[in-house]
View 1 (cartoon, rainbow, N blue to C red):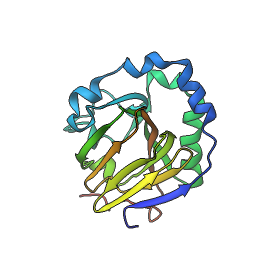
View 2 (view 1 turned 90 degrees about the vertical axis):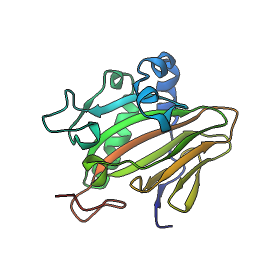
View 3 (view 1 turned 60 degrees about the vertical axis):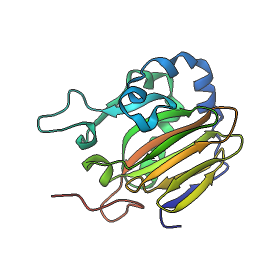
Length: 192
């Protein structure tokens, strides 16, 4: 596959799921992503790492902000953060943004491209935490079906979409890693 790289499988996600079970109210703490990003309107999310705010001078929006910070909810998810950091360390990279995302039953994330200087030079990872019937993700003309305990990297710089064909929410830990120069899986050269 050109747009997908399966990184691992049979990953123990029980600690992250236990963290989620202890703080279900956090799914509704920040609904800005669903309001502002129309393609994500069928999702709930919990920000763990987010763009630095306020935006630096010259930044049109958060897609051009490279620096990230811990979000307030991060303190509830030490295992999720450790996992993201461990992947960054294994790839000799630097952790960027991270969020837990719940896609509603029988709903979709509509086709979109993650544009901007931030995304262009980073790899996007999905760790599947919950997906009873598999988690189809389409990028370009390819579709990968991801299962719980699998970690995937994919090219979010091409048109991509997701669908939850289950009657239960589909939950992923989604995070970005800035790889060392020449080591990325799905990165593009920086724009001048």
